[in-house]
Length: 369
Image 1 (cartoon, rainbow, N blue to C red):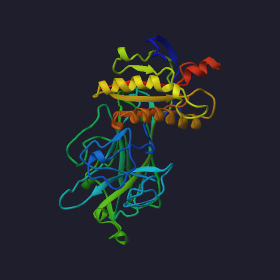
Image 2 (image 1 turned 90 degrees about the vertical axis):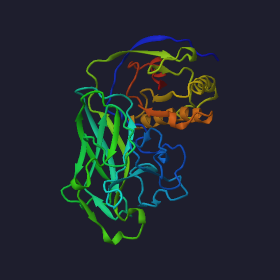
Image 3 (image 1 turned 135 degrees about the vertical axis):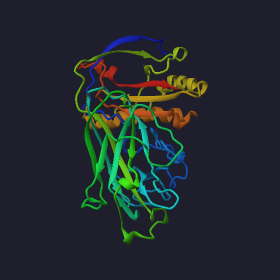
Image 4 (image 1 turned 120 degrees about the horizontal axis):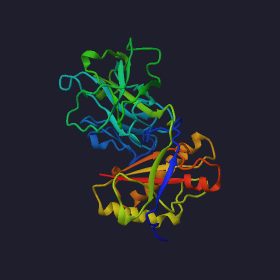
């Protein structure tokens, strides 16, 4: 099998965004390694697509863990995931003599920059950990144009696009999964999402829950929350289809920040399992990444129009993750790879033919530095 030459095709893409979540690994289901305990370093947060924007140390919990980071039972309490088997955990509020305004945040890069004037729905679920001695009344989501990478672990000076401020710290929903949601009109260019508490202790209400004292010494002076199912979804399709240029992948002619369709990448029927016929082309990608060690890779899975939106979204995510797993098995560091799944929301062709179905079933790849 040979790598296809670079073929440039001008295609009209109808971007149907109503089921298109721009957030990678939105439910923290994908893992580099099963977490064993709480994080002691920002680099311990090994959720593909996510990182800590500060020196704070967010945590990952998953049912695959045999240690203190298990689901449902873990060092921070007991909770099933809102959906799936995983979730993240962050300190929203802390009061101690050393770090009065200690905060933790989680950050990810969206699949594409938000478009000016376009309306998006921002959502995530949060839940007070059952071993947390304090409860806090603020949490939010910020959207920024560039990634944040700071050396402190204090409050971020960023204005949240989605801000939850409860009138009363304790409500009937406290201790259950709660939904934070808002509709947001983009300024344009926002591509990084951050979740946490963007207000200092003076502006954050907190209440002590004395019956929880002693369950975990790390939480005796803090409000600690689980996070799950994060989404940024366009609420309206583009009024005009875009004309885009998409090329086949040629290892000798790779350009950064250009979208390539991986040719000859095939999966077993109705499955995310890669067929052996895909390996030769993927090995070319591996070779390129080994040669260019500073380059990151973004993989996007797409399906045809057969099947429900929910099913195709899960299948597209699983397929892009399968490609990522293959690259990792060949020695590519998992931290260099981000995966997205778009289901059938971004077809290259909208006619209901077998040829269109074949074109729409694809994995796209983009290299960035």
